[in-house]
Length: 421
Picture 1: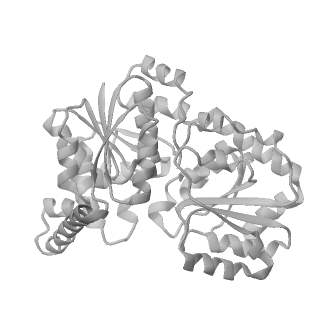
Picture 2: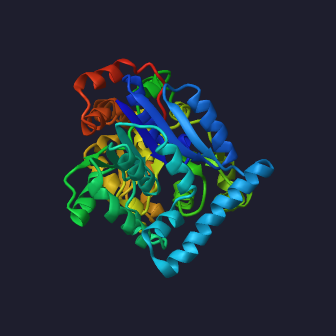
Picture 3: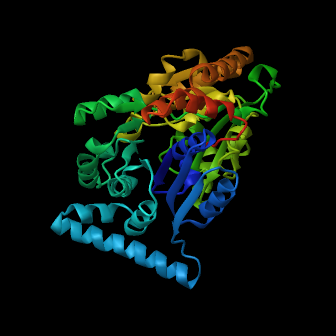
């Protein structure tokens, strides 16, 4: 089968798209990925990633590099700004889509330039692109709806609603990352073709890692948080406040890109007593992240219920920690409760915005290292039994109407290092 997956951001920062492209290509299907290139560092990561893959990548590059690149970037971004201004007055569907998706015209040309049996959009911004290509080639349309964008309250709700109302009913299936989001989408649009695909990872990513019960036990509890960007509003300040309440040796390891100003604010918040225990790590390539987690003890999943768009999802952080064999300290959001209530042995929930409650969770593991190892091992075991991509991919293959033998071919090809983020 010929499949075209379309993203509105770099593949190296789109783990859901990557897992689908990898598994389809490994199963022998003809896979093409279409996405923009607009950031220099992510563009370099894309190049390294694509060199190891069996699928092809077609990109419209408008990185502001050199005279031509700067001109192209200025034109693309300027066109979007003009569409945004005009949409406030004219309210047309075309203006809505051009005001929401960078390089919409160019990406439509790329996506529709070759036939496929299935066009799959990864994000609302990619849905108008995939829908037009599917219509041109009389192909099937799929959509991965990762977030409840109508509940983000960022000013784009009217455009998001227009995109959903125009295209959702044309989709052969709509995949979502949690049962909580599935329920809300079903209530809103009466969709019957929803498929829950959790943000889980292939266990092949941990093939060089030791299981937790074989790792050395240290005197210092090592906490871990990662993101593409380390920034405010992500719960990091809350974690530092919890550390200050412990009066025990605890390290907080943060991985991602960070501005010097924000780093200084975190170090100032930690103060002299904890400053040495706040450790920053650079972002790593897509396939390497989970393998870097072996030295750590506790993964922090610090989402907030105050942000309804994110609160209903189950982020890749939680599943990354579990498959890497870390105990999970997670805020009690709708989405994270969905997983942690089923597997309480893998970690603990606490009410977000409450550093004292987080400190109590961490204190239990600093005081009882044996209990910590048991929790880490439970996370390692349960993720492989129920929450890894090898199992979740079966639902994805089924949504596309692919035969069972296609899924078995993918399972047999798991020596490939599939991605995470």
